[in-house]
Length: 98
Image (cartoon, rainbow, N blue to C red; front, top):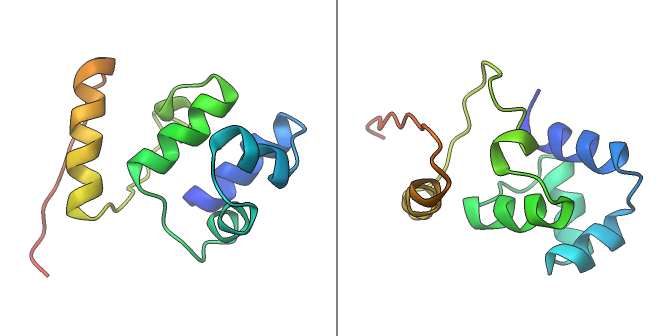
């Protein structure tokens, strides 16, 4: 499952409309829609805002433990490392040349 489908699954499981999630997370409703449709890639900061809106951890939000890889740009990866340091979460980062 990709991130967009996962985000939609969690939102629908919580019976929350996109506009309500957007308001809770401090994001634009159209951005939530783009994320769910796979038209935009969330930064780790965005995932943190969405997870916080549900009172969940980011790993749970992303179906932690699933055999999936999520690509983040370098800024998002650095942001992720800073956040994960404080949440005591194990993370594996593979850097591949372009």
